[in-house]
Amino acid sequence: MANLASITYIHNGTPGPYGLNTTIAEGTYPISSSSATCPVGNLSASDFVEVIPTQAVASHVAFCEIKASRTNSNAGQGIVTIKPIDASTSPASTITLQVRVYRNT
Image (tube, rainbow, N blue to C red; front, side):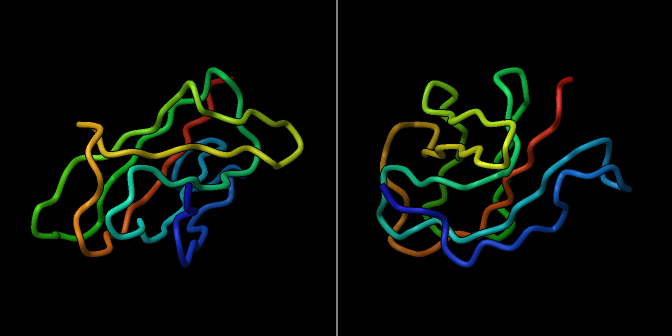
């Protein structure tokens, strides 16, 4: 399983203009991969995760988090697993995704 590449954190989970305690990470999904992980800091079982592509790509498929593969942490070690929503592999080109974690506390 690969990680998203070139991850940048647009918002780090502290209160701010994107909403209370929201984390937004952006990274590149690997080519022809069935899943990828993204570290997101603190993560609880009740947090909501949204995966949004930020560019158009030929043969695009939608992506989602696999909640059963979530690594919860209150010490900044939370990890989400992302897969194409139809359980296929990703297209043969990279896709930039945003991973948004909304705190549900």
